[in-house]
Image 1 (cartoon, rainbow, N blue to C red):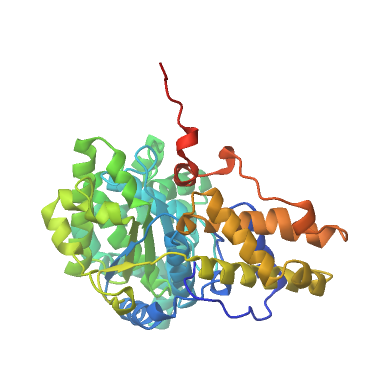
Image 2: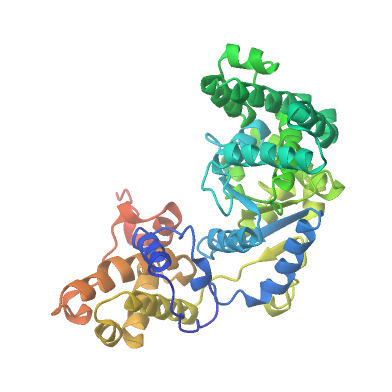
Length: 443
């Protein structure tokens, strides 16, 4: 989330403050309001803003985010997604996993994209509102050109064909499904319209009757998925959106899949990068996140030489001189000092919504936050870099909530940080493990 001492948080709306605090209480990265915590990211801002502006002008960008567990990769991409959304982008965050979203099955990746699609006006899934807005825009453009109402339908059909001409070269069924959806809406057949929209979003097992009505066959496959992404970008642009920001999170999970599936997934990633750089996807900002082991290890990117070449970035210099314009950027992770600073920011944010903010700040002072941060790092084997999630969860749920609700609660007297293995992530459990935890068979 941060690597520098945060500046005290300005006054914010109660709703944004509540959303952030609630997420931290659950041990999760907030979905919104991330700018409240995003200190230490200023060195990325200028380069990332320029990339978003370029995408808004019709370019496409690929970015690889590199960081150890706990360094804030998910936070970073959600923070960037918020900035993109404020510029009018649609956004989608996709968790890569072997069972739910394997990267070598691009049709599944596309389906998750449409399921997670959000816009400044609509939460996921925003696919249908976006398509409805597109047809409305086509009608408005037709009327603005002087087309009479009686010929509006045929003019919209012509505009649809013209604007999806390039898409139809690769995925003709995308335009066919849109026509089928509009026909069902015009006929008042909501069941068919919903089914066709599901098919357009890559959902499998859509009723055969709906597919026949739309003039499409079967389910979306791996090769058609990229054409559908191209079509979605066209629809987004024509319906007034600046572009599409997509995150493929936790790509390092590819290291744990079967070797044949891993090789296919790495090749799919190489293909995606090449398609982005070829200009096929104007208006797309595609980001991935992964650990250094994924980018540098033989079970990850280095397994496929062409992919390694595309992602090669020099990280031999002092991190202060990292190039934020490079294809790969690294997050340095937390130090004890930056963790303490983040805790103070959260404390001040919490105090703003409290009935007794002065008590919050007096009881949970900077010295206590420092002690809690040290204890959280100590509970994880001294690995401060993986401690932020646990530290913030304990700070909010175990300390600040109690100070806020109980007038006689003093965390120095009444609370000692305890860690249950059940509340830790796999990485945190590994960090917490010690030699004493290993059972040995002695003679």
